[in-house]
Length: 168
Image (cartoon, rainbow, N blue to C red; front, side, top):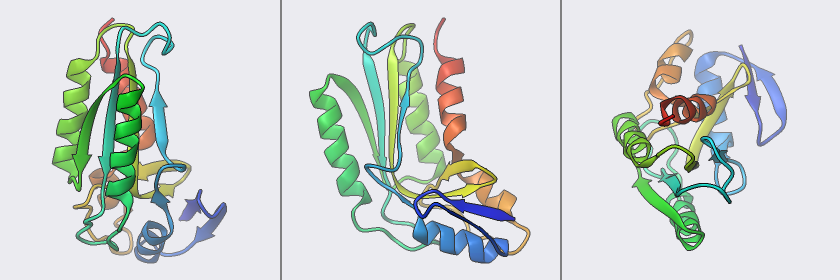
């Protein structure tokens, strides 16, 4: 299975078990690699309000722990607050807590609002889809890539979710 590493700009073929571990260790989504700006329906200048979800994950259970992702997320949250965003912060969150944080920002959005998601933590790419890893992502063996996909968040899926769930 081709595994793309956007940070390294390379594509590799290897077993899923090796790819999941190596890719998680190589790709660390931080300040410059994964700020997903999600424009729900209006430009920031026209938006009634701005809402941001800022996630920082250091304490991974089954992949290498990180040291600076939470600090990066806190720095970004502070800057976004200065820019007038209503910021929801989530640190060291598993899949369920990430889902709850998404529900929290969805509840704050109205028609014409702007939403932004910032993620600092591990991520990986499979078949041109980027995934954000919660801290409780499981270990996967050969042929179990679906297990990791199901336990992670596709970046494009987050964008779609906010667009389609925004009030009309």
